[in-house]
Length: 118
Image (cartoon, rainbow, N blue to C red):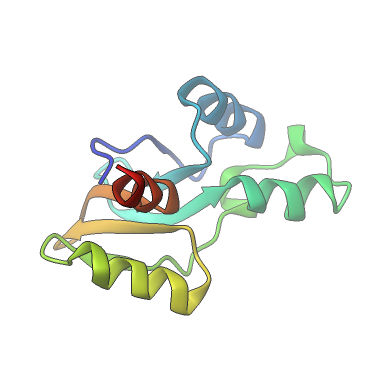
């Protein structure tokens, strides 16, 4: 699990969010309100499909216009096997780890690959 997570807000621009992703060399940002309440996830794929391939003007778009709101979450007690099954079943590459309503971390497909490959 990666923790603390790198986050952005729904009001951030796509350009701002892209720069954060590039700076941290990550493929997704957790979208939260000020109190760390989960609102969604913004992935490279969201930007590619919903902005660039759709030929939208990224300067005029906010994260909330593009983010995925149907986020798969797991509890702190979830095993890596449980998480990998969820990711495989739903075709996702990111699972947000929650403790109650608070975002605690994120498990990515890369995390799982690194674990398996040693």
